Amino acid sequence: MAEPETLPLSRPTSEAPAFPEADLVDAYRLMVLARITDERCLMLQRQGRIGFYAPLMGQEAAQIGASRALAAEDWVFPAYRELAVALARGVSLRAIFDQLLGNAEDTIKGRQMPNHFGFREVNFVVASSPIGTQITQAVGAAMAAQRRHDPIVTIAFFGDGATSSNDFHAGLNFAGVFQTPTIFFCQNNQWAISMPRERQTRSATLAEKGSAYGIPGVLVDGNDVHAVFAAVRDARARAVSGGGPTMIEAEVYRFGPHSTSDDPKRYRTEQQLSAAKERDPISRLKSELIRAGKWTEEKDHSLWEESRARVAQTFEAAEKARPLDPRTVFDDVFATLTSRLTEERDEYDSLVRDGVLKP
Image (cartoon, helix red, strand yellow):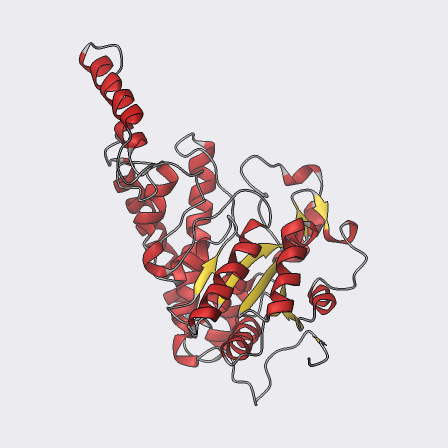
């Protein structure tokens, strides 16, 4: 087995081309859409119009860069903050809002927490709330692909806090032993809710944790869409060629709260947040595009206005959709409804007919 190595924080070299130049404007548009959707969802939760939300502000470049380096047939195992990944995979805003609302159009039928969406048509697995469980799931799916000789990879997205979970260590150990085609993509946003990264581990980096399991570790600037794209592209190429898994740490910063149940002002200062926002990945890519003559301030103003209108209109349409039929609780439990469930469904129908319950 080759000696594992931890690569230094760096941008791609000329031998490793960066993010495809023709797609950079599209990547920027997606990053802006994700940011505006994030802002809107935080506001909607405060208004009581959705129940819960976990924002990704500050992590847009990491998610878009990683997503665009994958193939359509690859499988994504998200945490609960991968909105930009879903958008990059082609998921519609409407489908995301339907899930946040749990309305009649929600493909999950309201059976998951808001922000825990999944979309089979783009190989985007439903998120789980327990920390780190997607890591072992991604390894298992990769091993299945390995046995089928299916040339795909699985990628698990998780935060720095998940590197302290049981599933992280079990997943990496299994992947290292069986050399599964898995990419472990850690978005180190510096906070595991209120726990700062430096209080979680004595390791100099999180990327180097892969070395203990015989997995190469790569450390990248997560605010640089080029560096992230190159790291994931190279990890994917390595995996499909039989080289095994890669652990990637993308250094980012979470601008917002951990979730709408969190108040970050209780554990970090405004000075820390302001310093992080000076490295805003959206501002960084915008400046790059303007310097290259591919973007203007006028186009940028229009993009933000049009995106805000699109997000508002899409949510309003989703909000007007019919509520979920309570009878769907009896669906999808068994292939054929059991006698007991049939009795319960009939009892429900009778209570609705008698006016005891509202339909």
